[in-house]
Amino acid sequence: MTVRKNQAKLTPDEKRAFTGALLELKRNGTYDRFVSAHNIFLMSDSDFGDRVGHRAPSFLPWHRRYLLDFEAELQKVDPRVSLPYWDWTVDRTAASSLWAADFLGGTGRDRDGQVLDGPFAYAAGRWPITVGVDKRPYLRRTLGAAVPELPTKAEVNAVLAMPVYDTAPWNSASDGFRNHLEGWRGAGLHNRVHVWIGGQMASAASPNEPAFWMHHAFIDMLWAEWQRRNPKSAYLPATGTPDVVDLHKPMRPWNNVTPADMLDHRKFYTFDTESAH
Image (cartoon, rainbow, N blue to C red; front, top):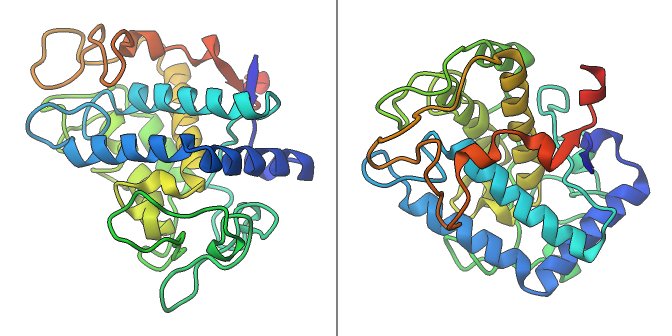
């Protein structure tokens, strides 16, 4: 069983294995296929009309499956690797361990945001950006420049206390847990982290940023924690809702994966915190 660990607790060998697997997926073309898929879905998901990966109830199960597929590709490279999660309520600054030169590298330089250190720096030659909103070929970050602070533990706990998964109109105007976690309402949790990192992470091609996977692994863990705290609260809508994915409706691009299939993460992996529950 795969165990997803807090990135702050990874050993040097585990960090090297994870970054090495990312670099190999970039080299063999697999990585950019995932970037392209996310880019297409985010650009087509809107508040009005068919929406699957974003601004919709299926935001959480869609990304759970997307991360599972990516994690499987990492494990083809190195079976020891799993997706770490980044708890940004604790590791809150540009000095946090994930931004060190031995892991993801730090923020970008002032004039163009280009990341200059770590394994994903453009000068290292192994992380060319080929899918994006412009032609700049280098990874960009502007940590903390657009918004000064990451979400707090208190803000997260307030969202985890919301007892209803989602509500009509099932988009970015909705009340409920999903939309507050996605960040279109309230404290802006998921969305604010994208903006705090900046660069490609603030675009539809956000998986160009390796921190994307650790951010979404934490969002996924927060969904699991909400389920634990609210055992009687179900995925909504259950059935028959136009333009969104109800409980038993397949999610594009998969032909046979429904939100119901994704509700129990323990079929696929556990988090290193779960032994404490």
